[in-house]
Image (tube, rainbow, N blue to C red):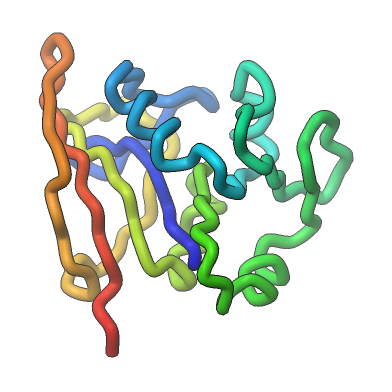
Length: 159
């Protein structure tokens, strides 16, 4: 099962200049808790933005070129998504924007930290999705400085 995890602004803002636009310590803890022990899938730019390999997780990087330090490199996300579409194991997609967009149709769950703020300077966005296709559950909330946010779990409705 694929799940997408991200911290987003009011307009689905993700990042700027290959960095997260929101750096919230509580969100970082939430991210670590949700991804620990799982496979995490990311694009090359997301991989390069990390300070290093995410310990305790199998780091899978989508890249047509060479990537050093990853546990696995896949040349095309589409094939990986199709090959693993029926697995019951939760595989988490952690970015970036293009990888989220390609993986969204396969996702049965979204873990979104929804920040109540607009960031017009963003240059990367989470893809639009039809929230009516999901059951939305607020699993926590908090505030950090001038930011208020909610941890929201979206489970895709069975058809």
